[in-house]
Length: 95
View 1 (cartoon, rainbow, N blue to C red):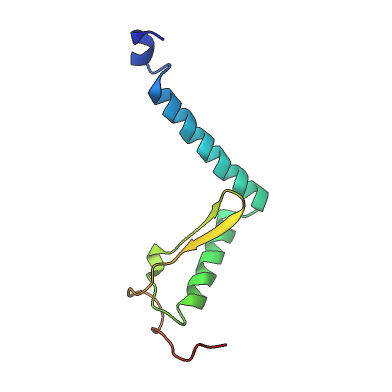
View 2: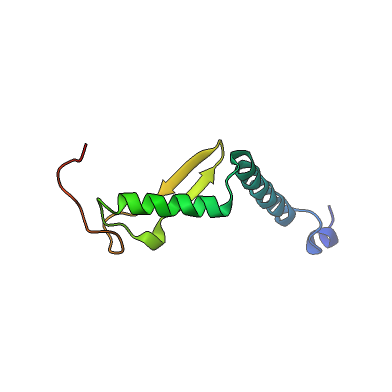
């Protein structure tokens, strides 16, 4: 590996990092394909989760993230205690 090769971006740490990023993106695409979830379905799931949880707790709707992780795990990150949700905390424990 010569100086000119590194300068031109053909080999070295920059190309290694680019390869890792491409590999991670491919993994994400494959997970979505295996789960057979379209972006529209994922958005619908997100909206339904927001609707259900906001009945009980204030949540920041714009900050809710639903994503598919490696291994087929559907993960929802839901910030609590901020405005933007439903009617606040309800009492009773509701079972």
